Length: 459
Image (cartoon, rainbow, N blue to C red):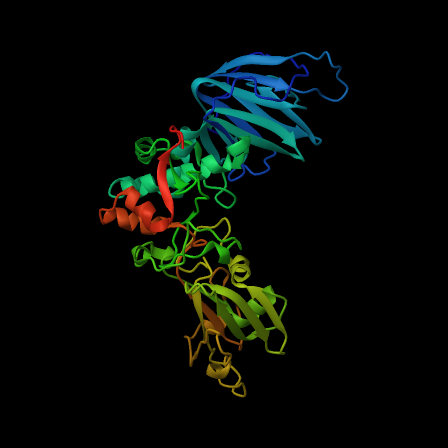
């Protein structure tokens, strides 16, 4: 374990006090709930890596009177707090002291330029600037990191893009900084809290990921994307790779937004590796099993009217004639590599075409595969006579081969892009930066009816 234990007596008192932060909140400070790498932990170790902190414990344990004692001590670099539970009761200790019940909120309020490490029991760790609030809630610890908004962006931009892009794509990182700041400003209006999760809000990796991308944050300080008329921050959407065609948000979330349009994006073509071109294979029996059907006999797909090519709806029909309708996104979610590294064989989005590979042992009495789809408006596919000697043993790209063959064929989904495709394509922005476009030109390409303005100026 990286955390350093400091021997010494536990300085511990408990008193019922308010659960609000003890230190004043600057206007630029925001609260970020840590749910990406620290979702519902039972055990944690917090090590002060830099600076000094004020450690307070608020709340009372069962059976204690309202005149409880108070935990209010200063902790410095090298000191450690451990959090756990025993018999569903939350416990904590400072350094090597005895564990005590932690019935309320434990706060570490940074005194100056502080930084601390959060470590899970399985060895996963991260460094965070600012302060940390820890509370036992619904059987796990809830962590909230409070820090300056610009310092928060230091941990967002390299998480959403890459520090390595600063070498010849700094303007893309600047565009990302402006988009991320816009998202932050709009999302935290009214003291609302955001999370560090890319699936909920935007990715935030803390101080651990900081690097060359910090320059992009500094050089765009206070700049946001605002509506051209109202000067208010827009809803700033972006995704990893739009597959060469941006999407209208009405087809993703059902809400029209004048700042976005479905249109070709030549800058996203041919870049991004697996995110640009991917292929996912799944056997007809496995595809059917996932959706409660027998081996799938044919597939009908319908694209959005936007012209992007993304699949709006899918109808699966199995060999017994049973049918199931679902959205393109539901199909993606069934095979998406949650928590796994992506590859050229991952199912990454709903911009895809589908084809069928017949196995060598496919029954001869089946109707011709190429005649399976004759429905106007549907995307059609044709059969290959054979897909290779191991095709009949494929379960899926993610599950590998089965020990025995199956006669019903394999479906191949060939797609492009990763993410919803609305707004800025991060790989497209990087390509534009390599071609010499400025961050302002990149943002102008991906967002319509907007202006770049400073939050430090009056509208």
